[in-house]
Image 1 (cartoon, rainbow, N blue to C red):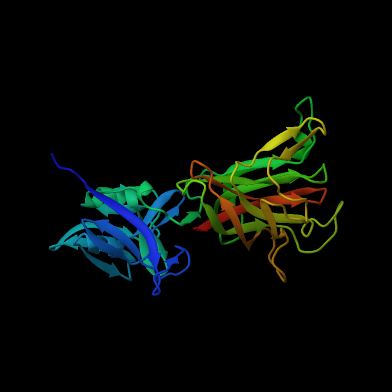
Image 2: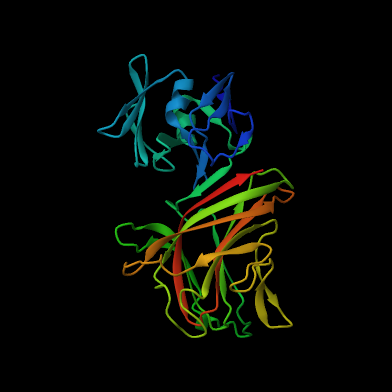
Length: 344
């Protein structure tokens, strides 16, 4: 009986002064990998839509294979003793393994000048086991190629209706194509009509596999696709400047809970009030298009946040991204390309 080699990845990245470097900090950071003898990868692995992505060149070389890059065809060919094992094509979700087409979990990516392939394929191709739980990945990427990536929509700060009729709020969430001209991709959609003068809407994502009760610094980046023109006036406030974008993280799962006394659904975490941040979320901008924009329709706007949060006793922390509205009208937008980097 043949047994697979057990492959343990440790993504401790080292600087010249022997201090810990966060996985997201430097493109040329190296990552230790143990397969009988210690091998060093050329770049730190990361999570893409919950799939572990590994730098294929240094990984294959560590297993004794030759890697040849064809710049014209944008392919990496991995072989040994003149015999091709597999080929991967940049941007494709298919690979050729031993002459047969194999469907990848995620498209082949190029990051910091290196080609990354999903770990499950490398498990199969090289006959090893890359155990996701054996290393501490410090970067999570979500491009929503195949779905929501575990992000859950949440709405709050609206009035309770005994009949259950909330249609006037037009609360909608969906996984669908983002209509940014020339840059169409799949992402997370949100919409609502702020009839309570304070509607909050957003997405929550559970991040697990962390050290229980350990505090982390989170750097959060994402693309907001918005059609709100900067400036302007509306009911109660500006449709752009009065819709505040917020992001944060919490040890407890964010939920919308009915305040029976007030008859209002409220968040169970401190998100702040409109232009003011709270203990668990900070204001990072508004939904207005980038200054000087001349784009018609939806346009991408980069957003960033830096927050602190502790993992719970199960090693989980909850990311939350959303908006707190002071504009008493209809707002819609999309979220795409979310990156969360964690540092202990």
